[in-house]
Image (cartoon, rainbow, N blue to C red):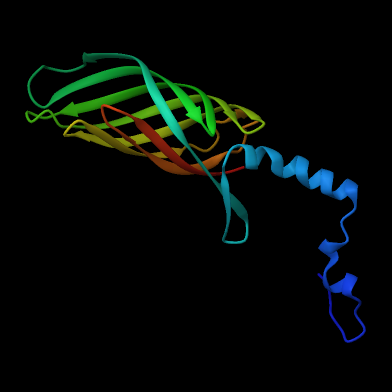
Length: 177
């Protein structure tokens, strides 16, 4: 903390203006990955900064089969593989339990293991997924489960959402490390 007095010099009041070339290079190294990824960071409750990561994902495989009597609501189990692009680059392996209705709508819950990279950090984490499918669009909420991360993503926490239709699948997550 800088204490200002009438005798404080300009350097005391504005210490950040006295950056040397070394300090500038250090800041550039710290900020470069965040700038490259188009991520935004916001302070939250004074303890951790949340970083918004956004992007798209593609479903690469979908295998679904009933796990109970075929009557409605149909209860199915789906194993899904996804490719993630954007601020998170990697793959996800997802297991869903779905309850489908007569009108072709469905509710689902699932677990997704993401293996990938966020900036310079590489590792894995697991998310809980809760959502719905209606009128050709799937929407859901994700929560990163504590204690499920590895590698450079160790300690990641956060939550977010996704939205899909026939043309695209987008995600937004607010994360901290």
